Image (tube, rainbow, N blue to C red; front, side, top):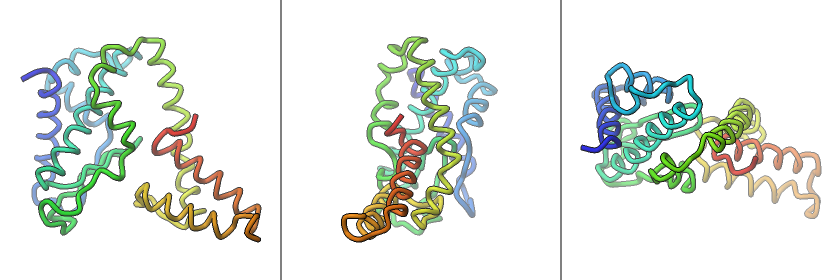
Length: 208
C-alpha cells in the first residue's frame, strides 16, 4: 500500500466508524482529519509540521486528495454523497438520503477543476514554497468570501444547502428578471452580480 492509499484508508475508516447507524450526515473539518492522521501515526502526514507553510500545504493536499478519491468511490459503491467545501466536509449516507444504491449520486456539487487538481499527485511534489504562499493568500481571500456567502445566498433566495447547479439556475432566472435592458431594476441586478461573485470565490475560487 503506497502512502496515498494509507491516508485514503485511514480517512475511510474515520467515516466508516461514524456513518454506521448515523441519524444525520457525518460532518467534520479538514483540521479534524489532519489531527486524526497525526494522532494515529498515518505517514507522511504524521511526519509533517503544520506550523511550516510548505509542509502544511502538503498535509492539506494529501487529505484533500484522499477526500476526492473517496468521493468518487462512495458514489461508485453507492455508499453516499461526500460533499467537500472550503470549510466543511459532509458525508450523507445513501440510507439516510433514501437514495437507492447506484441512483442519483453525482459529483455535480464539486468544482471539476478543483477536484482534478487534488487528484493529480504531481501537484504535491511540484508546488514550490513560493507557490504555496500564493495559494495561502488565495485561500484567505476565498475564506473571507465564504463568510459573506450566507448574505449572498439570501440575495438569491437560497440557503447553505444549495448546490452549484441551483445557485446558477436561480442566478440566471433572477438576472433575466432584473436585467436593465429588459426593464428590470439596475440596483437589484448589480446586487445579483456581486452575490454571484462572492459565491464563486467562496465555494469554487473561480475569481481572485
